[in-house]
Length: 213
Image (cartoon, rainbow, N blue to C red; front, side, top):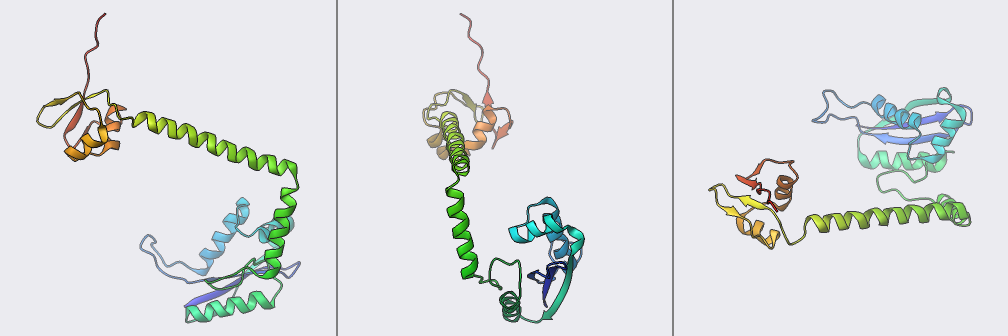
């Protein structure tokens, strides 16, 4: 059973149409209901994180009490619910950005709005600076992360490992090859070094005695 529902603004008479299939999931103690779907929408709208900006803006402007949730129709198959949702979106004044169904597309009006919004944003120097700053921050963080990883996973491994049989290995020039040879996980070995793990497959980190000058 598939359900078509609407979230309608009673002031503007504009609606958001959606579909849901009430069903049971292994991680749920009870069956997922249509009301659960409405609660999911309300949670995101209250947090200001809903994926539909038109619905979110209207919610922010008019308030929660102006919106009414209702079930429009129940049908038996996915094909029928997709067609029904698509028909309602095309024939009504709605908040939906895309056509209905799982194989949705953006309509021409929405595409043009998105293009216009992009053109407008890129003429705003403050917006451009914000984007550039975000990109630079991303690459700076990524560069630092890469250097840290390269440093941690360098070929020279200046630590001594003790095998399950008690044999010490202190001349490890290539940790990747060493781990492959002995069936070890390189990440787990580094967890030994940082103290996050005590042993790995019986292998332990042998602490070196401090040298006196």
